[in-house]
Amino acid sequence: MKVIVDPDRCVGNGICEALAPELFEVAVSGQARLLVDEISSDQQQLAQQAVDSCPALALTIVP
Ligand code: SF4
Image 1 (cartoon, protein in one colour):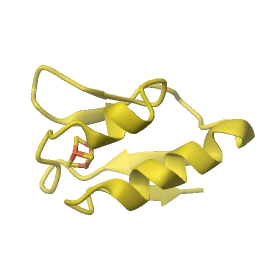
Image 2 (tube, helix red, strand yellow):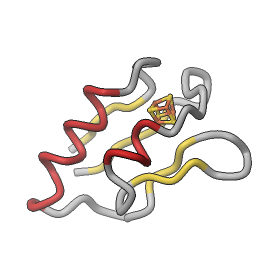
Image 3 (cartoon, helix red, strand yellow):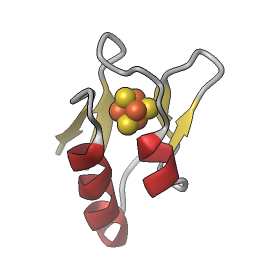
């Protein structure tokens, strides 16, 4: 699975990066980006937590 970031929604507050620094980084553009090509099975719970914690609803899990 992957997580996509909606650039129109992300406000760059870094909550996803703080929760899951191995998965997300807020780039110099001020928007979050995914750091991995594919989220491994042992990272899925963390990814879900980040998605659920994004106040801007900018993160979406895709298969
Ligand atoms: S938590 Fe949401 S709004 Fe904040 S940086 Fe991450 S994707 Fe963007």
